[in-house]
Length: 183
Image (cartoon, rainbow, N blue to C red; front, side, top):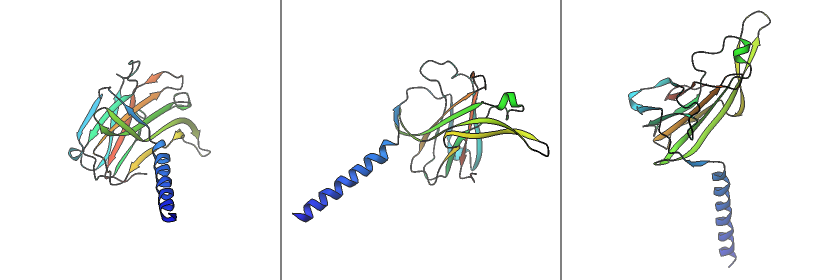
C-alpha cells in the first residue's frame, strides 16, 4: 500500500511539473495569411537572413503583425529576432523610444501555434565621450533573440511589429538564422 501511495504521489508531482512548464507556453490559433513565406530552409543554406520590411500589416484588422512563415527547420540550429527596417536610426529623435517586437511560434497543426520566444526592444541614443554616437537597443521584455539548438519542429511563424518614437507603426523587419553563429 505504501509503495502504491508513493507511486501516486510521484505521478501527481510529474503532472504538476508538466502543467507548470506548459503554463509558460502560449498556444494560439492564427488564421492570418503569411506576408512572406521563406520556402524550405534548405534552399537558404547556412547564415543570417533579413526578412520582412513589409507595411501591409499596419492597421490590418485582426492580423496586426507582419508574418513570415518558414519550414524545413527540423534538426537545424535556428535563431530569430527583430531588426530595424532600412538601417538603424541615425539621430536621437529617430532612436529614443523607437520600439520593435517579435514573437516566434512553432506550428503544431494547421493554424495552431505555440510561442517559443518573444521580445520587445526599445531604442536609446548614446554618445561616447571621445566622439561617436548611435542607437542602442535595450530589451524591455522577453529576450533580444530566440535560439533553438537542433530544432525538434519543422515549421515556424515569425511575427514582427515596429513603432517610431512618436508611437506610429512603421514597416516591420526581422531576421532568422540557420546553422549560424548567434551573438
